[in-house]
Picture 1 (tube, helix red, strand yellow):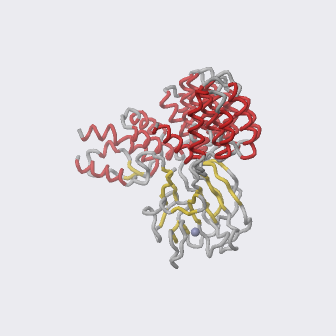
Picture 2 (tube, chains in turn blue, cyan):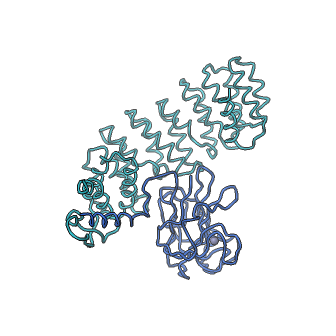
Picture 3 (cartoon, protein in one colour):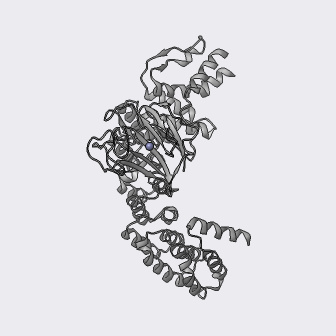
Length: 177
Length: 332
Ligand SMILES: [Zn+2]
């Protein structure tokens, strides 16, 4: 009996990716399966203040999901309509964002425009394909939380590390709202 | 004890887990006597889900209930739609109705079928039992329901049952805040329209008293100004509060309406709400106006002086101003 109990609890423990109780935090998951290629600092040492997730040059292969768990209104800005995988210059990235009531903004950049790239209200829905629009060297999704123009790092710090592989929906961080 | 614990608390979780992780544990009950649970591919069952909810809802732990709700939302996308809908339509226990409805709504919110939501909306409007209408309204809370059917809310806030009307008001407040972040004009406009459409002062006051109005249209601003003339003091106070947060283009009109109304208003709570909104619309620029209003009602003099003191500190952020005002009130 005791042994079975242990097994059962081990199975339950493996469910740790599901929050034990809902809090004011909004959980943010990976928009597709990929590797974390940068967090607070690039490998060069310069400040990034966001999380980059890439699935190794699979441009246009994975659908990009909005990361936040729960229903949210998403605002999409399309600046590049074509298939761009290896960058087309600063300011040209496609963007999806949600603004929380406390002024924090969650943004995801660089995806390719598809029929799904429109403003919508949904819970983790498709917003485009993995791509490299904007100021990038390769296809990935840049996930950023900022407020009053400054990037916040606390939401993913301690949860996500460079080099880590994340499956779709696996926790990148939690935004206090 | 362990066995009872396993049956009562862990099994429901496992049953739901099966839906999430299929292939996963099959027949956890049998495995209680064997060495280790066998892994077998299974499909999710609506019946299993409902058992889990029934048992889980008996739990006294709020955290556990929230946990179950989260699991339910996650597993909803793996359930057979037709079976889920059939179970929802033949269910008459409010707790079960709420959760099955939430599972249907979750499917729409996750981008599966648009019409799963419509099935729930229809029942919220048409079920004969007010308790079940209220339960389905709760199931739509903190979802994109506002964008999918604003018209539904205008009907819900006029429901014959006060319970249903209040649940709808709570949805309007929470949806605009949590789903739309308080920054989406059309969502706030829908909330203003619904609040204005209700004949229940408690509903109108609840929605308007908490709504973020920073992105509303001029049309909505006019509706709020008209509500300043309501017979209900509660509604007048809430409309005054809502007018304090309007967009820049509406500020001058709002200020004028509020100032004009202050002179004839008799209710002290409404007067305080008006003063707060005048302060919010003008910051330190509102001081001369507040000084003029000092003569209107001597019983409000200390309230006005307190606003003048705080505004003269020149904070540039409304939440700081408000906090300072509250601090002064407590200090007195
Ligand atoms: Zn980046």
